Amino acid sequence: MGHLNLPISKRSPRQWRLLDLVSAAFFAIVFIFLLLVFTPLGDSMAASGRQALLLSTSDPGQRHRLAALVELGTQPVTIEACSADSVDHMPCEDPRRNSQLSREMNFYRERHCPLPDDTPLCLIPPPKGYEIPVPWPESLHKVWHSNMPHNKIAERKGHQGWMKLEGPYFIFPGGGTMFPEGAVPYIEKLGQYIPISGGTIRTALDMGCGVASFGGYLLAEDILTVSFAPRDSHKSQIQFALERGIPAFVAMLGTRRLPFPGFSFDLVHCSRCLVPFTAYNATYFLEVDRLLRPGGYLVISGPPVRWANQDKEWDDLQAVARSLCYEIIVVEGSTAIWKKPLGDSCLPNQNEFGLELCDESDDPSYAWYYKLKKCVSRTSTAKGELAVGTIPKWPSRLTKVPSRATQMKNGIDVYEADTRRWLRRVAYYKNSLNIKLGTPAIRNVMDMNAFFGGFAAALKSDPVWVMNVVPARKTPTLAVIYDRGLIGVYHDWCEPFSTYPRTYDLIHVAGIESLIKDQGKNRCSLVDLMVEMDRILRPQGTVVVRDSPEVIDKVGRIARAIKWTATIHEKEPESHGREKILVATKKFWKLPSASH
Image (cartoon, rainbow, N blue to C red):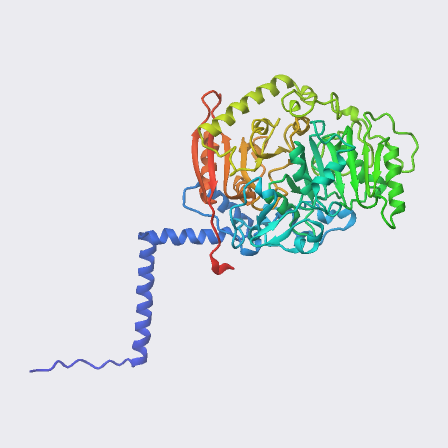
């Protein structure tokens, strides 16, 4: 057999190995390119890359482009979860950011919101071990420890009856610093001097509320209390209040008016709230006076009322109250109760605090980022029946046209039409859209664009409470909502809301695009707004959005990107206009366990 003699290569084995590697790399690159271009894997990897970029805030332009990509919905983009350490994140009350600000008048503990470009575009995850909240009314007495595993209050305040840890639950015996025996006997004691029962008092404000047991137990008397406290060393007191199903939000009485209209509350309560009422020429007492209805009641329990080493502060507090002609009803132990006068004509020309009536041009209902004023708000600026005892008792005040509604153009007709419209719409929600209103699944409700509070009024018979939000740039109708015996706040939806994550069971909004527009132009992003809605919505919570078909389509695209399950429905047969209704459920998703 013959042999084929091949010429011996002049290349060394080392050179051959190098050529093999280069060739292999070339063919691998070609294969990967073909794989990405012609298979679904390429789409999947591209989507993952976009998702990773969504978490980047280093380039605002890139963030805007990605938000636009979500809004367009032409490619499957999912906004990813934030990190595990963000489970309780509140963008405007972030201690890490705000600790650098001025301490004067507690400015650093007020709202200070980052720009959207400085915020990651991601979804706040639930904490490890999160459970669907205990339903109302059981939640008044116990909540899951794993939903807010913060033991500080239980350890520090357990002996005062605030709360204690029992097995998998935090238990709330109903006590407080000034009522360690429980809120019920404390409220009964107040009832000896104040008309707690019978509907005369309906709206209350609890300042520095702790875990809000006072407001929680007033609900049995049909008194609706707005409980507030700052995000402070206790860390989670408002979070506990909302988990219990008690109306509450995060706020600080610092340099600005609280976000409520003038003459809204029938009762203002401070139980060891530590507000320095007479500091800064009694500025904080004047803010309480702005919020309290003529004929309303002020209760201060704890310092400085007959408190050791606070004789001067107690004397000053009594002097301020006298200057404004408040009637002292009783001082018992360390609790003092005053009644506000019906008019503003009593203020003397001379008093030791130099108090004067505000200028007639001052509107006591301006309260969104509005500096506190060192003057006395005039009740005469709000015409009509405002006084406790004059305004109709609850529940008739819910449906009687409030006098402050009559000040608006065609106010009576608009109010009555709005009331009828929402009764019809809520019936449709329950009967045709199967929204679980009236069941234990829904307790904490928000109406993001409340107008006259017609949606909340239509839920009167349901075991819910509603935070009625009146957008700060819209007609200021919040006073009418309070006159009806409902509660709410001013807010601008181009900023995050002052609440913890996972605090509402149902969020309702009619005209969602109007919340971010000004004179036809967008002031902020619908994507950012819906990511914020997701932050404050509980897992398995419900969102109801009403708007034009075009806007609803856009909302539906964003809903998919934030892991909501959404369906679109026709409006009620009796309604006019082009509206459609989107009903969405937030999925109960969790971070992978490796993230913890």
